[in-house]
Image (tube, rainbow, N blue to C red):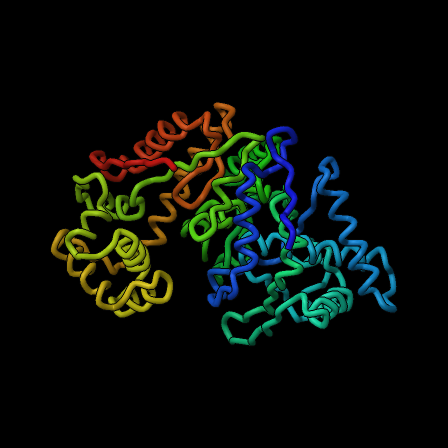
Length: 426
């Protein structure tokens, strides 16, 4: 495969930077196996577009025309069919750069007016599956059928072949989501909240709208609204999310090489944030620079193993549940989990780690991060949320450090006036 051609953001406000990002995308594409974990490596279909002001818009339309002509057969309403081809290719392009399976429903009713897929431009089951079948038969897509589990049906999964991925990858970082309120949602609401809606003057709505109105005028990779996502009810979890945070950064160094408004970025994150919030909720002082590292030394484990076990344990109600989740999600062996758990009990004998506090920690974290982003609006600084971290321009690194520390202290000190946070920068 030839090199992936990407135009530098330095002169055009396009969300890519160094030449080596091309090498990383190429390496990502040619990694032999697709991710096996459906629940941590998938993307739902989104309404995406490439701005007409970008050179990549015209380049992408050429690819859409090619696949339209090759796949249309006897399809009727070609303008409508073209819209489906474009939407599917754009979503596949983002699933490539995120290294995710693309999920699409095989249920014809999922394409009805008012359903999520219709907002993505997929209003016809026939058009959608005509094009997907063409890609499968051309050996451009790997397909895994969904399953009708009673509580949580799994949608059909699609994975691009190397050839298709190489063709689409350069566009994945340019594809943008549409900014359309409301920017707050409740996933799998409890029965009592199934019909709940936020009023326009609700603080969550007002503040997320203010953040997104400011963000709209900036440029970054996988640009899309910043939303706050609650689970079950409007008080539970509440993490901030935007697709940018799903770009690879460990196995493949992609996210940190992208740009904000043409400038290099820096990521600033809280150290052991959920654990520190948990300790604060128990009025337990954190007296070390890195509580994960302390537990690693006490247990003879790595810091990454401690981080993985503690994070799943805070969402567990039993040790067996935590041990299984640590193995499945973080590859922490049962022996290491046991050592870490014993080290935690020895270090904090009065605290029950397995109390399901994780979602409460997420709720606190979501409010802290929202306050950081709101301060950014006031100060003219775009901050993009990445779980317990933010990405900003490198020139705003001091602002990021000071603002995150201030917002954490103001929020958590309501629980424990003595609690302290620590941030680090990459």
